[in-house]
Length: 126
Image (tube, rainbow, N blue to C red; front, side, top):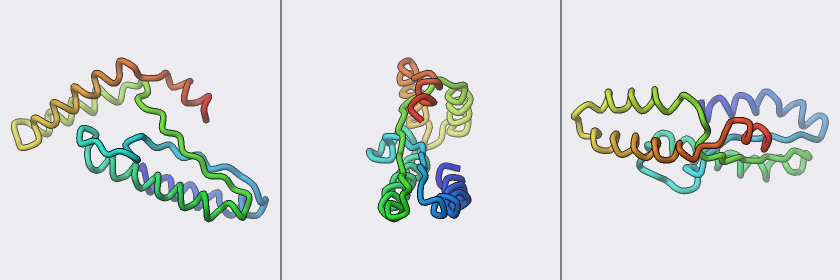
């Protein structure tokens, strides 16, 4: 979803934006796309690096067409995602080789979500 959904959406809107010679593409990313953090997981971090790279390249590619590309890196957002995701990660890790990392990740998310922004804050930025 982080990469392929973004690319499909951009491919869908680009012909119209190029034709009207204007537009703005806003991609949601994460600071994890600039600074890797093992507690966020390699797949998540990798997907966010991809979003950042695609966005940076598209910004240059589309500028001659009057199309701007922006990236928002909102940090933690209040949602119900964390609880279910962390529980599933700890359950899946069990006592295996990633158990300690899973617990550290859960602790990290619990701490960071204490400072999470309300969704309306991000919506206003968009």
